[in-house]
Length: 560
Image (cartoon, rainbow, N blue to C red; front, side, top):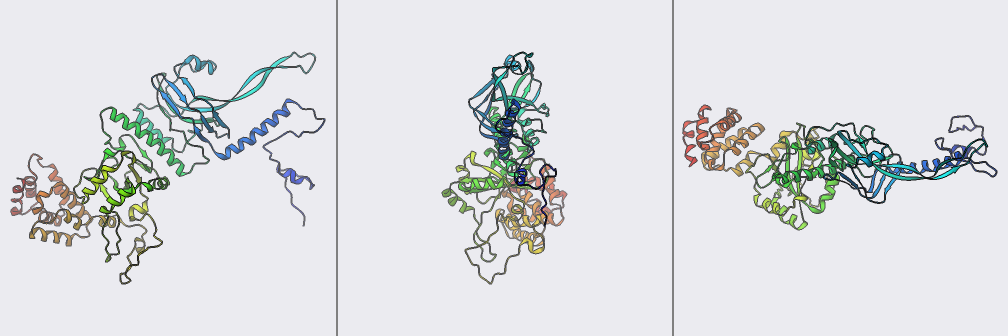
C-alpha cells in the first residue's frame, strides 16, 4: 500500500526522512536558520524578534482580552483630571499591558495633549470617547550607522526600542444625546451589551477602560464600567449578564445619590431611568412595602413577589440567575420577578416558619413558603403582617435584591426536580397529576391564578357578617367557581371598598356578578363623587345598575 503524503504549503514533496520536520512548519511564521559561516543582516535578526513576538502573542490570544487586575479609572470633574491606577490588561492582539504606576492627565492641559499628538487635538469635539490603555513602542538612544559603500555617508538610527503603554481617547460612533447623563448611560448599557469593540473602532492593541462624554471642549461625565470587562475569551451569556450587572449596580448607586442629593426618595419606577435590567440585581428598599403589599419599581404587567432567603444561599442564587435573559422594561409581556430578603440562618428559621403553610396529608401538600404578591398599589389581603414587619426591620438595604424567575419555575412554581423524598406518604392517596399529564408542559394562566387565589381566600379576609351575606357568598362561589374574570373583578371591588361594609358586600357582589357588570360597576364607583362616603356612593351608583332598593338603603347607614 502506497503512503499518501501532504505538504502544509500545498506543494508536492517527495518522501524523505525529513518529511516529519517539514509537516511541523507553521507557514504563518518564519525564523532564521543559523549555521557556521553565515553572513547575518539586520533583517535576519529582526525576523527572529518577530517570530518570538508572534509566538508570545499567540499565548495571549488564547487567554482572551480584558482587564487582568487594577486599572481603576476615575475623573475629577472639577479639574478635568483622568486618573488611572496601576494594573495589568490583555489586548485582543495578545499583548500584556502593564502600568507600573498611577497615571494622571489633565484634559484641560491642551498644550501637552497637542504635543503628544503631533500638534493635533487642541480642541475636543463633542461626543463619546472610549478611554483606552494602548501598547506603544518608542525608539530611544542613538547609534551611528556606518556606510555600506565608500561613497555613502554615515547616518544615525535608534539603538533601542522601548515598549510602553499610553492612555488615550478613541472617538466612538455613538452621538452624545441631549439627555440627562443618567439616561444616556442607561441607554448605552443596552446599546453596548455584547459589543466590546463598538463596531470595530477600538484598536486591537488596546484595552477599553470606560466611556467619557465631552461637551463644549470639557469633560462632562465618565462611566468606568461601560466597555470595560475582566479578561476572558469568547464571552457567553453569563459573561454579558455579569457586565450588565456591574454597569447596573454602578448606575443605580449614582441614581440614588442624585435623587437623595436633590431631596427625592429611592421610591421610583425603574423605567424612569432604565430600559434594560440584568436578571438579578439590587433594588431600592424604599420602592417596596411588603407589609401593605406594594412595590413601585417594576411595571404593572410584571408579576412581582417577595420572600425571605438564607444569606448563605445568596451567592449561589445570584450566580445561577446570570444564566437567564435580561429584563426588558419596555416589554408588554408578563414576567415573573421574585424579590429576596436575605436573613441570617437563625432569623430565617424564626420568621420563615411563620410564613409556611401547614402540612395537608389529604392533598399531599407538604409545608412550603408562599410568596407574597406585591402590586403597584397597597392591598390589605396579607395574613402575615406581623411576620413581614419583623423581617423588614432586620433586612439591610444593601442586601435586598430581585431575581428574574425562569419561565418553568414562574408558571409551575417548580424550581428543581425532586429525586428523593425522606417521607413516605400513605399509599391510599392517589398520585397528584402534573401539568405534563394533560400534554401541556406549562400550566395555563387561569390554573396558576386559581392556585394562588379563590373565593375562599377572599372570604378569609372579608368574612360574611350574617346568614344573608353567607348565603350570597355560597351562591357566588358555586356559580362562579371557575370564572377567573369574575373572581378578579370581585377582588378589585373588595380592594376599593373597605371592611367596614362587609355586612352588605357579598349580597351586593352576587347580583352584579350574575349580570356580568362587576367591572362596569367598579368604573362607575371610581368616577362617582369622592367627597361622599363610600356607602352613599355605592347607593347612588347602584340605582343605575338595578340593585334592590332595600339593599341600597342600608349602604349609607354604614358611613357613620
